[in-house]
Figure 1 (cartoon, rainbow, N blue to C red):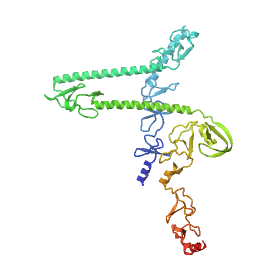
Figure 2 (cartoon, rainbow, N blue to C red):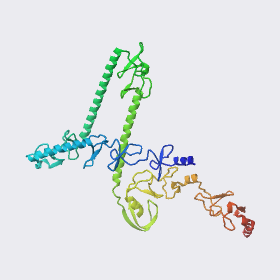
Figure 3 (cartoon, rainbow, N blue to C red):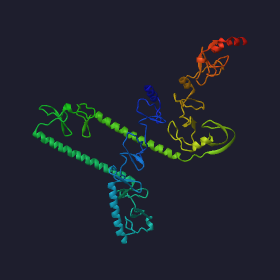
Amino acid sequence: NQSQVMSSIKEKLCIKCNTQIGTEPFLHQPEGPIHQKCFTIGTCPKCKKDLHPTEKIVDALDQRWHLECFVCFDCEGQLTGGYAVLPSKKVICKNCVNKLKQQQQQQQQGSSSSSSGPEGNCCFSCKGDLKDPSKGGAVKIGDMLWHKNCFVCKKCSCSLMSGVVKVNDDFYCQACVEVLKNEMQQQQMQQQQQQQQQQKQQQQSSSSSSSKKGIPSCNGCKKQVQRGEQVVKILGEYYHMECVKCFKCNKTIDDGQFAEINNAPHCVQCFQNIQNQQELKNQQDKLDFEKRQQQKAEEEAEKAQVQLKKLQSSTSVTCSICYDKFTGEYHTLEDIIYCNECAEVTKRSIKCVSCKRIIRGNVQFRRALGKLYHMKCFKCTHCKCVLERKDFKVNENKPYCDEHYAELFGQIQEPCKICNKIIQDGKAVEALGNYYHFDCFKCSACNGPFVNDKFMPQNDKLYCQPCFFEGKANADNNSN
């Protein structure tokens, strides 16, 4: 029974990605099963990516963050040793808090000394009078005052009135901050390269000194090099020719062509594969970012309330959404007719149950099974054809087209032997090569049900055993 339950769950669709559960790990939710990779517990406020239970997450400031995203706003260091929240709702580490306090104390001392002299109302940059009307007014940052025309980026001298970033007691525009970050990263890379070169030189000097004292050893097999053996020196280490292997695939590099990655030799093929994987990852990250930006723009555009036109009709009108017929008050938008209930739904920001995208106010949608769909998203569960008509069949709260409902659930396209009406719901009794509705499958004499489904046929009619043995079947035939 347990295997049957698991197999039935694997055939169901994930409530988020709308694909079969299959053999992938999943979780049980009240709405239905969901892939473990699709289950999220929120969105990181910094990187705007989904939070998964398997990731390292930090709960802070009434929000959930990726551990690597919860960093200081100024130095971008991890906030493992505590943090503070500024009035601007920016989070900084303890070290930056201490620096900020020192800066404030220095500014207070400077302002107290300057306020006693003639420079108390002077621009911090040009030392001119702040009341000079030709300077465009004044701006205050902390305890410091500038003319608006003097409040410019230290690097490119552009105006900072539209945005400012403070770096090491200096003020920069956002573009110059990015340039500074790139320069700092290049400096760090140069320092790392210099350190690696120094380490190589030290290793070469140590290996040369050891070779003078004794016989060098192969860095691959750790055996001493014997006389007459061919060796090669790679990255400051000695190797037997057969011991030079790719760090990735562990294959011997016979041709001597290799590339260095993290101080380890790689064959040309593995080096190209690593580069291609990195390029694909960068492209995918870019596409994901553009997709998130597009979805965000669409959601913001849909926040505006839809304006519907209210009308009155004395004749019967059919709603374009739920197909209900009504008279009286109704609403329209771009030739789409809404009943009052569907109009209220349209005014709100709603999402399609199938594609999870917002349903625009000027787009016709479908209301069925207590849910909302785009017209093109309301499809047959089996063949995925669009169910454009109002009529459709339902099994286990899932919609099906007429063709596949009959194929999957045994709909019978035969007339009932008694009433000659087509059996539509698939529920019928087959007896003596004929089909009967459940309500029509009864004794022809007393109209009672058959006890234990036992009946007696005579002249294309069915009788219960008591009526048959009492001769009612013959009496019925004689009367006819």
